[in-house]
Image (cartoon, rainbow, N blue to C red; front, side, top):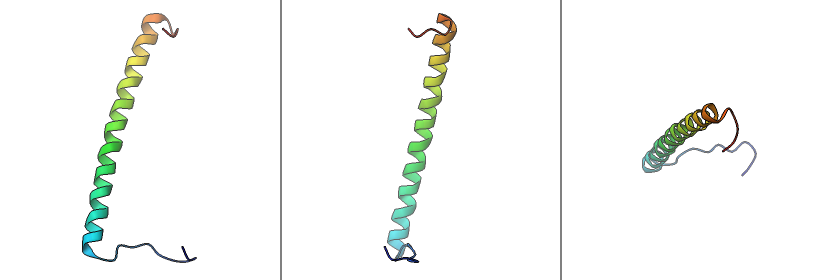
Length: 55
């Protein structure tokens, strides 16, 4: 890429495709964050039962 070059969609279809991909990524991120939070809860619950020792 040239110095100072600007990335920008060159047509409406491309802009829509990029927006759709951003929405898909946002959804995936939200799902991963929810799974991460659930795993953290499970891990902390296990630590509470075992006194912090790994099973």
